[in-house]
Image (tube, rainbow, N blue to C red; front, side):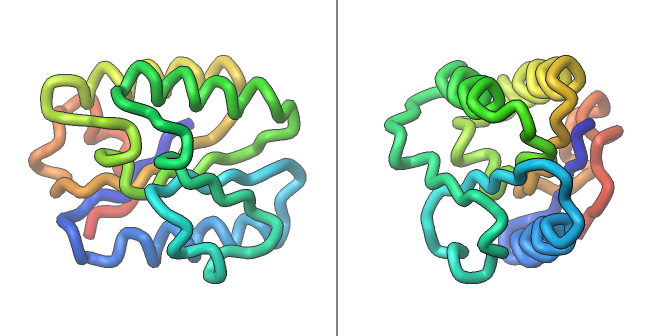
Length: 139
């Protein structure tokens, strides 16, 4: 299952994402991973959550990001949820590939039974219709 938290830059998406991750970590039965573009939020996240700085792994395009994401899933059979902050940046998303990347992540999520919570720096009304159905929080 994919959930998207959408809104323009500076609207508080990361705060919502961190609160959601920390709340889930209190009662989680599996592993939780938080992907971000830096280690900036390390001390805001519960120590039960694994923070991965995607930029440390030299990813250069959305295909490499999807491969990286699949690698994370394949290494942890207890993975419950992956939180993706700054999604457009860490996954190298633009208007041309947003729909295809979300569709691919949805297939992976369903097949591997891993939930995804994505922070997306776009207003909900600017998202393609096929992506809008995943929006759970619009700021």
